[in-house]
Image (cartoon, rainbow, N blue to C red; front, side, top):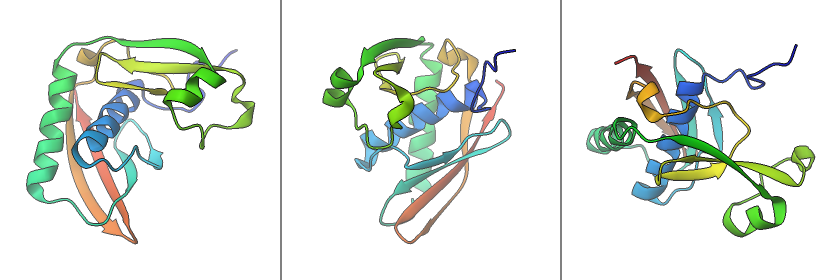
Length: 150
């Protein structure tokens, strides 16, 4: 039997992580999370960052992520070769065994990145996004979040 979800990610949560990452890039130019733990109940993302977020910033992140979720856009996949990918994406975290043909996940016109995880097919499947906590230690900002089934 083939494991349809090799990383055991929850597809809703994993797609929300992509939207969160792009929101952090757009708001703070901090790059995508360098570490993430994605589970159905709650998830966390770690970012290279020089401070904790204010309550206002967390509220703005939630607002923006939920706007993308509510925009009812398709989550699509495409494939490109490694050389093409190197022109658009950082390949530093990509294992060599990933091969020459790489998978790109795109969430409407909002986010596009390399990914091997399982995703939903449309943002309307995600529900609402909520940051449950954040902390900052040693130049690492950790955001913990949940999804509600709206």
